[in-house]
Length: 198
Image 1 (tube, rainbow, N blue to C red):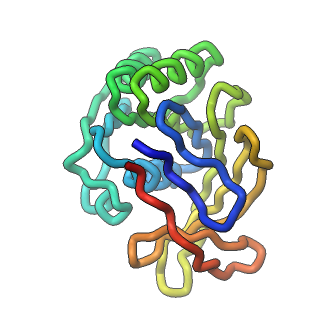
Image 2 (cartoon, helix red, strand yellow):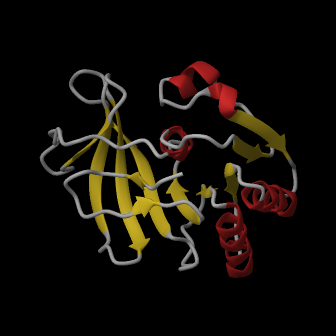
């Protein structure tokens, strides 16, 4: 798998194989995670949760093929973290929600992702962590739809190596591509969309 270039025309990090990323925020982080994972190719995607209520047609609208998903349920958080670690080490991309995550757990996930050359997403519905073992840390929120009804998110990059923090908007176009826009201006910068990962 090659890297996923998140935004063209902006100084931004890439989602590289063998890395783990934190996405904090409201319920919209689930759709944002699905959008990112839909840009990957090849390996199945393990979605871990205490209960799985993903809506397959909605995932398809985010360019995530529901046929690639492997669902895993675990009530206890330590079991969900263990499932994420196992999936990543085995070469599956993986995502799952957590309430709290220790620095040791983040390091373990990062090592597992590196071993399996997979992408891991930790979905944090609470306060964002401060662990720099995450390749990137984001805070994501829903934005009102664009003029043509396109889905939008507010994205705040909290941490990434070599890239300064910043806030901007993302819009999922009806063509399936994702574009960046200036939150202050509200318009859409129709730049080259996200590239699919190999």
